[in-house]
Image (cartoon, rainbow, N blue to C red; front, side, top):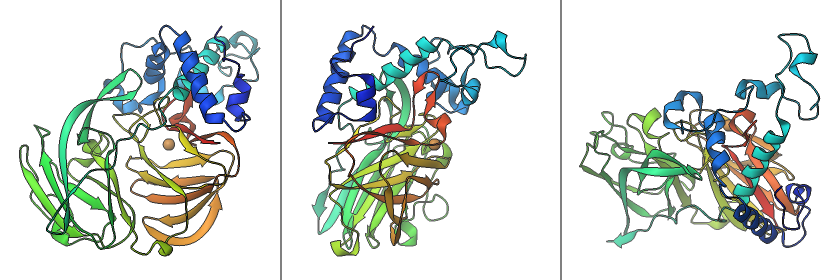
Length: 386
Ligand SMILES: [Cu+2]
């Protein structure tokens, strides 16, 4: 049916596409996408079957078609290589119901094509600031918006400044920082905790412990000095299992004054992990809405993993090892791995030496957070090295 515009599926999935891999991949995705009349039709089905944790079923697209026979529970025992197996040929109670493997292939394929057609950069710009009396002042407004988690799937999100994650706050060690939090949520109080920062106690952002709650319509001003460099976060500490997983979260990065105090890298990418009402997400998006990570051959890519969800996510990169250089902002003795556990609240800094050209899958290895009969979903992206 659908042609790959000169690129075979095997070629772009293995990444053996030469020096213009990304351009070819994206062009390929775009061209293929144009051939489809309803490119998002199967995404709705994918969302219904997998993108959201079971407890959040009410927030996902309930108008989607019924998932393929067998359902998610059958996925663990599914064997793509054994297509001749059928329910009637094995003892009752032990066999997986027969699959429509052509339909499954189609769902998997369409997800990848949609992913490759995404723009390369979908994240918002770092949060702007003004400088007043030598203080970097950031304006942060908590408000609800309709957020597109995957193409065509809108979910109510609680946001800082209208985006999930909130815009990255980036300052330098020693900076004087002011955060002006306005609560426009309308019907609940909130507060910001600066996760990982060494900070004066009254600025720690925990209602009824260090400050009054910031009620609807109110403002609270946080003032502190950025003391400890590293990968940190900011998030709600009010009704947090709900507010944070709905989107009140963001990266707070303090660059070291002395760049030599941190391992060398050429470019960086922050990947915030999420699970909850928005589904399984990387930077507020579920596959195929996730962003393609790109690097040139030979570059050292710093990936800052941050987990703002409620579950542990072992993040796995195909093709190349990661060197773990810091945890929770503190530089540690480096070690190599290809899968790194990121627990809720943790930040893990990993440097990837991009030695291998190609499109390398990059995903959570709790596979029920990443792939089902309906194709890949949730915590999946790709590192494309050209
Ligand atoms: Cu996971």
